[in-house]
Amino acid sequence: MKKVMTAAGLFLCLALASAGYTQADRTQQVETLLNVLDSGSSTQRVKTAKVITQAGIEDQALYEKVAALLRDGYAKSIDSDHVDEMSWLCKALSASGDPQYAVLLNEIAQQAPSHKLRHYAKQSIGMIGEYAERTQILKSTETWHADLSIEENRLLNMLNSDKIQLKRDAAKSVVRSINLHNQVYEVVATELLEMSTDVKWRAGKVDTMAWLCKALAASGNSKYKATLKQVESRADNPKLKMHASRALKQIN
Image (tube, rainbow, N blue to C red):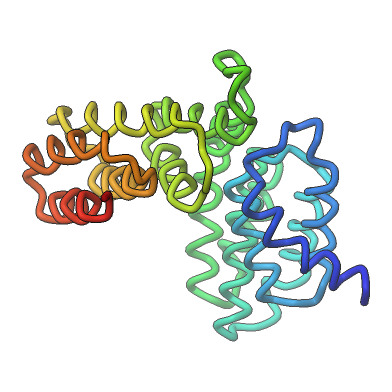
């Protein structure tokens, strides 16, 4: 019990810092995630699954544990909390980027008693390849800056990628982080301006730009008012204009 409580206590810290580990230094994080998956708490397992989907972890034991939980649990109940947990575990398994797990996910998509769970299992199959590519982007060190932390370098990798979901996830992390190097906010501003001049529509563009606005607001730096004003004036989408305006008001 003490080990389980310790794992649960460390969970929040590791979740917030998950982007700040090199692959070689993630032993403690993986061990903690494994302990939480064993804790018997559905709420903590869901939180763990969410961390796994974002962390770019490459660890066979971790994904085997996720797979074991799915094999044992996907047909047990149609209770909404249980289905939610199983659905998130499907997403976590797809984050492995390993096509071998498509067999299990396909079994769940065909045989799970919950329509919702079948839907997410099928969706997760299609995300395996995307996650494999995502992990390569997250762990790339080719353009890393020595004066930035690992977390900050990984955020730059995400912001500079051509994957709009990665940009959005990075923006969300920036909003929730503190004491980031100014270079991170500079890249946020650059990406936001570039997207505001791009007339081509891409899925999730407005939502991503809204989060980038929030990320600039989180900087608290008045120099980014000019960027937000440009975005606000260019925006022909009411939602984006609202978020740019709201971000402007949050900067003193």
